[in-house]
Length: 159
Image (cartoon, rainbow, N blue to C red; front, top):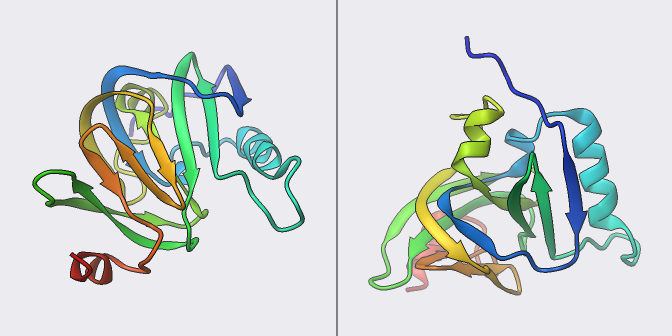
């Protein structure tokens, strides 16, 4: 069994971070960031300053000096499609148990020993700033739709 790496440095931000060109994995962050101290700090930051029951739609963070983008799904837990923009094709699907999804550098997923945990989708090399709109995110040629569907089949039927 591979030894699990650890989170030795992190910071959270409400400020946009331009994600560098690297290979990304889209996954529920609870499957990659399994350190209880980190997860508690992440959750506290996500709710900080929000009305009761509210959560920040986007959280930018650096973990072990690598940038991570996390966003809230519009309908919480479920299974959501990951598609390409043009032509619109299903790349995969992601299961959500924490109400959030993250674009995490694949290098960090490997470093933390979390490859294969959760139902994520490898989306290849991307760079720039993900665009968030009411639970949907576009990043490069990738689209994740969480605003009007509770499952992959319903999302694909809308096209």
